[in-house]
Image (cartoon, rainbow, N blue to C red; front, side, top):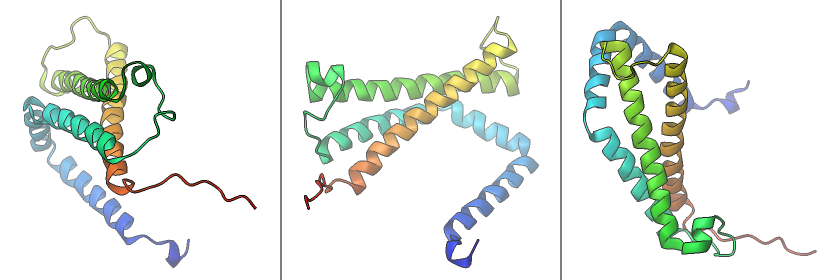
Length: 163
């Protein structure tokens, strides 16, 4: 651990997250209300679908991939357009459906709503685990597409020189 390895940005992010955690913990009821209002609005689902559309379209438009390197049954059978449509649908449906399930779990747990009748605690924990993974996968996947389109749009394949 040397001064050379110190990252001020990471340090400030960690301090910010700790302070945010303390503020949320000391204002639990207000924080629960803000999360409830956010989940009940249509904006999280709209944001997920916008990320999916923008991410896939940006990746298809701005990055060049050789068609012989492109894999997948959809791409090989139906081409670039169908692959883009199925990618958008996969990311969008995975994100919005998992968000809807997580919203139901949150409202049932913290606001005594009844969204999942007949499910045991183990089942609810399974729904939470799988839904949170799908939501992460969807948003992470679309953000990676956008980042790749922005930062690697001009990248070329590198072939090693023969010596």
